Length: 147
Image 1 (cartoon, one colour):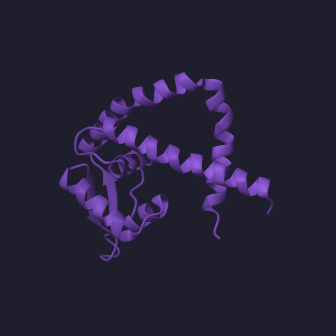
Image 2: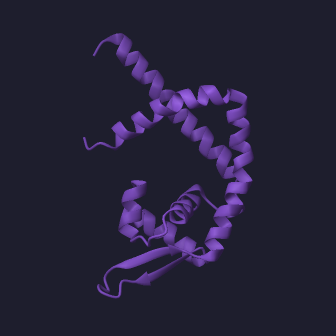
């Protein structure tokens, strides 16, 4: 590598990390009381994917450990936002689905934080945001590739 590429890479990831931290803080403050970003993320995923998922599939989707996903799912079950049922063919497996209360909680969360992120996009300008999305998607895709 050369110094220009190293400097560019460091600047890019510095911006990505700081943006992630600030965005999570802004969205967290806008979420309904008691809801965390991890809860919203799982509810949003389940709301957009009608098939039931196993906890292991959800952990893989979100790039977290099974233990971390179990912790999130336990909180969502306690809140009544998801249903977990045994696999009728293999009692060792479980399936997760969103409940009507979970769908309502997800919708309330979207209603709470969408104005915040919409204002940010409006302030930056839709054309600039549209222009940066392909770069961010490619960056994400490359980061998802096995090392």
